[in-house]
Amino acid sequence: MERTLLVTFSLILFASVAADDYVRPKPRQALQFPWKQKSTSQPEQVHISLAGDKHMRVSWVTNDKSSPSFVEYGTSPGKYSFLGQGESTSYSYIFYRSGKIHHAVIGPLEPDTVYYYRCGGGGPEFHLKTPPSRFPITFAVAGDLGQTGWTKSTLDHIDQCKYEVHLLPGDLSYADYMQHKWDTFGELVQPLASVRPWMVTQGNHEKENIPFVVDEFVSYNSRWKMPYAESGSNSNLYYSFEVAGVHVIMLGSYTDCDRYSDQYNWLKGDLAKVDRERTPWLIALFHVPWYNSNDAHQNEGDGMMAEMEPLLYASGVDIVFTGHVHAYERTKRVNNGKSDPCGPVHITIGDGGNREGLARKYKDPSPEWSVFREASFGHGELQMVNSTHAHWTWHRNDDDEPTKSDEVWLTSLVNSGCWTEKKWNENLRKILMEP
Image (cartoon, rainbow, N blue to C red):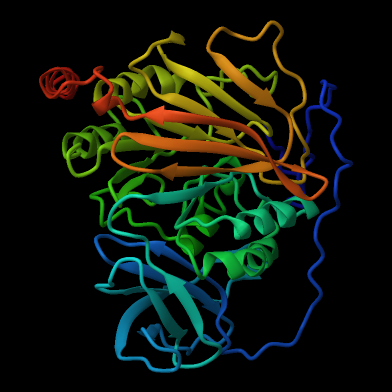
C-alpha cells in the first residue's frame, strides 16, 4: 500500500473494505504502552535469531550508551559458563535517537537444548530453546503483525503452539516513521522472541526512507540483524539459513531483483549450494505475493516473479510464504501462472493483526490455482514431520480462539517423482548457467 509522507512524517493509510461470507469480529484498537521508568542499562527488546551452524544471535537495546555488548550463557539457571562478545550500533531519525542496539553471537550450541542467558552483565535472566538437529520441526508463521489487539491475540495463539522457529514475511512493527513504535514493538514481542528464534524479512512498512535525509530500512537493519553474512549475502534484506533438514531462503521484495542485481546473483549461488540430501525441504519467504486472488495489491509482485520464479521452480522450492495482503490464501502447486504439480505451494499469510484492517474482497470467480482463501486474522503452523511429509495448518483468530480453519499434508518435491536427482541437476544447471 503506497504511503504519502506529510510534513509531520505521518501517513494516511487506506484499508480495503468489502464483505464476504465469514462474519468477523470487530476491529481492535492499537495497543497502548504506558511510560515507565527503566534503568538506563536494563536490556530491552530482547530477541534471538539463528546465526549460522549451531549459533544464535542475541539482540537487545539499552538506553545507556556505555553498556557492554556481551552475553553470558549456560545450561543451568544463574550459572553462565560461556561468554559471547558482540557489537553495537545506533541510529538517528529526524529528532529521534535510538538507544544502543546490541548484537552478540553465542555458540556453538547443542541442539534441542534450553540455555539461560543474561545480556550485558546485568538485568533479568532469559532462556532460549535451540531447534532440533533433525525432524520433526515446527515453524510458526505470521506476517504483517503491527501492534493491535489482534496482534496480541495472534501472539498469544502462537505462544500456545509447540514451535521451534518463527517465520515472518515482512511488515513487523508498523512504526511508519514514528520510531518509538519500534521500541514498543520490541517490548511486545520480547516474551516470544527472546525464547524462540524469529527469522524475518522486510516489507513495505520497513522502508521508512525520507529522500536526501534518511536511507531506506535504517531502523529495520539496525534492530533486526539477520544471518546475511553467514549465508554469503551482502545485504540484510536477503539471506538464507538451514535448520533440521530445511533450507529457508528469505528474499527482499523491496530491493533490486533483476538478473543483473546482487540479490539475483546471490540467490543463484545459494541455490547451487543446496544439498537436498541434507535439507530435503526448500522454503522461500518474501513480502509481496506472486499468486494473489484478492483485490488488494494485484500485480505488485509481477516484476520479481518474472525474474525469480524460474530459479525457484528449477530448484524445486516446496513452499513460498508471503504477506502484504491482509488475508489468508493457499494455492495448489503452481508455476508460470497455472497449476503445476512440480511447482511450489504459495501461501499468503499477511494476517497477523495490523492496524490497517483486513483485505476483504476477493476476485470472483476464484482462479483455478486457488484452494482456500479467507479474510481473517490468524497464524500458521508448519510441521516438517520427516524428509517426505509436512503438515500445514492455518488458525483463524475467531473470538480469541485459534480455530483451525485450513490444513493440508504436503509431500516434498524431491521425494515426489518430480525431481529425480538427474532431472533436478539438469534443470538447476541450466538456469544457473544463464547469463
